[in-house]
Amino acid sequence: MDFLVPLFRDLLLSFVVAAGFGLLFNTPRRVIWVAGLLGGLGHGLRFLLLQQQIAIVPATLAGAVFIGLAGIFLAHRVHTPPVVFTMPACITMIPGLYAYRAMLGCIRITNLEMVKKDPDVLPVTAHYFVLTASLLFTLAIGICVGALLFRKRSVKSIFRRIF
Image (cartoon, rainbow, N blue to C red; front, top):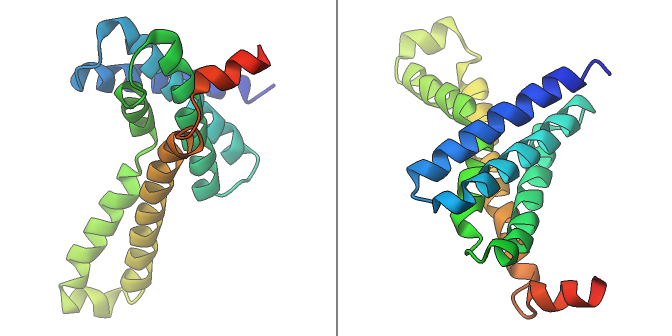
């Protein structure tokens, strides 16, 4: 039960961030809530997985796949292309802190005196760089999974058979 308040805070903040980026990217106002909902739920899933000691890359992949699949489904409900709200929703999971640390490490590496003082700067910088790249790739893959799975058959036809 201790995780419910942080989870709710994470869902709410992610909703606001995704809806804000939806506004920034000119998402139609009638579907801003979809971008916020997907951003909140995708980031919330990632948060829950991280709380269960799942590494950040697979947790981010799971959140992005959820956003991609739910985006395909909701696109047919609101009659809007999924990219209009899946992109703002995934922005909540962009690894800005890790990219920032990788950049700072690259700047430190250019100073030979700094490298002599702190020999760990090269492996730490490489770690942040690889982590940033991995997270960005998982976001791209996660969004594309839905489009790749449903490229031959429409989501509408699949859900008509189920429901």
